[in-house]
Image (cartoon, rainbow, N blue to C red; front, side):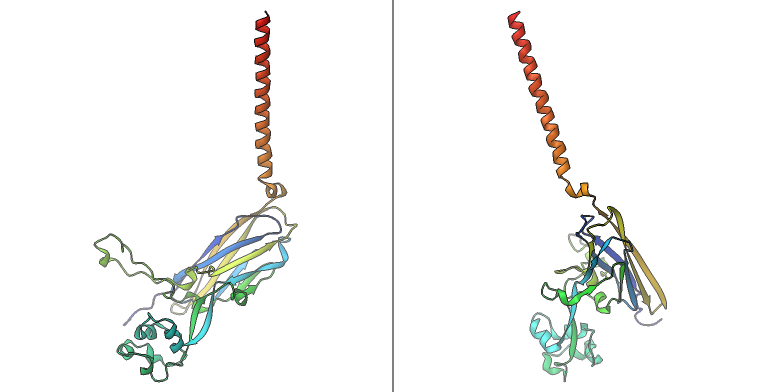
Length: 283
């Protein structure tokens, strides 16, 4: 094969359980990240927790930590004064038209947006972190037994707007020039105001105490290999019993009872010692 070879897709689910123990009537929270390389093709994410009498009638929600907004090249560059025109036009890969603008040789000598005929008003899709005010617009409902959703390709795009992957041995090593280039981070690996995904499950007031698991399965196609891959991860959480819900009250009761018992023994021992001393004096 001539030219640059395309790296095959590889993705892994990274669930982060925020609530390992939960009381009945409360919510289980799992933050989900997706690590990997290249863009995600056709895909399906399945989340399953199929237990009877566990999830309430209002089962919960999935919050997407990013959203995509439409803007023009001109508006974008005006809001990012530190970004050079040539660099940005080359790197933006969500153009609706004008593929030639991505060519380095075509734009490297341009001084401002006016040198690109018609480009100022070209619309681009920018990925933005969700905010507290916008998160309701990117919240997805779920059903009591699970969820299935298709992930947008832009979630696995290069996240260079948010951070840059560090090169190995960048600090304190004279041979750092020999280190390989890092694989760029993608948006679904990054946390901003919210993680890329947040699953919130509402537990019934009458749920049976015990351990439960949530399964995450990601299927995705790699067009270059004409194959389908998958990754599967699982988290386990515990629904507290009534006694566990009341803790640490029982623990404190036991501690206080122990202290009282020790003090009682000490008092009794002191009284006994005093009585012996008095008796010894009399005799």
